[in-house]
Length: 172
Image 1 (cartoon, rainbow, N blue to C red):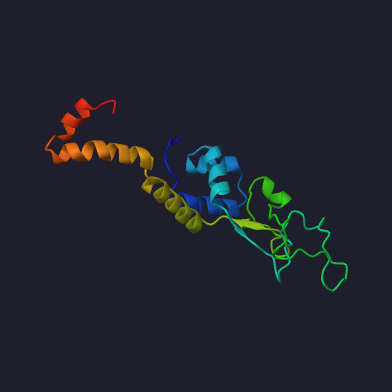
Image 2: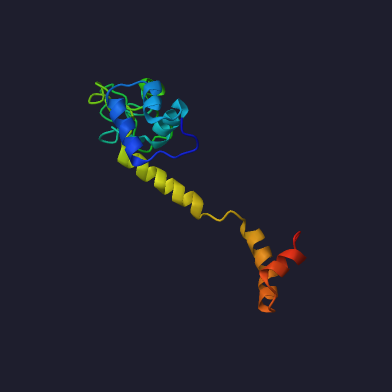
């Protein structure tokens, strides 16, 4: 079993293909040589929602059936407008267990709830965007950076070496 390696596009494509074959989490994990927890996290982190709401009616809302607002034409149908303060899209009950996505669900065409899909290309792109954004951020606060800059810059301008500054100001 591999340890501490990131999934690549080929492995993500294998996950997508094995999901299509309705393979279990354990089968996918053993096929790829990673833990089942890795597959579990991969699917949940990199699946994306597709909203099936139409004509301003939030059928994907978890409060849709309990909504007390009636439609403007008073035909008795429940109505949840775009500006509803109770609107809260949620996963359908079937998405709370494996495989967590609607990719190959036989009911997905008629389902009005928020649907989640896993695609290898999208997952890989999402991973690389998250990876680069976390590695591009400063690891030090602006205050600490300014404090170090105010200490080091004048000493460098006076001709001191970086090594000398570090030796003389280890605790600074």
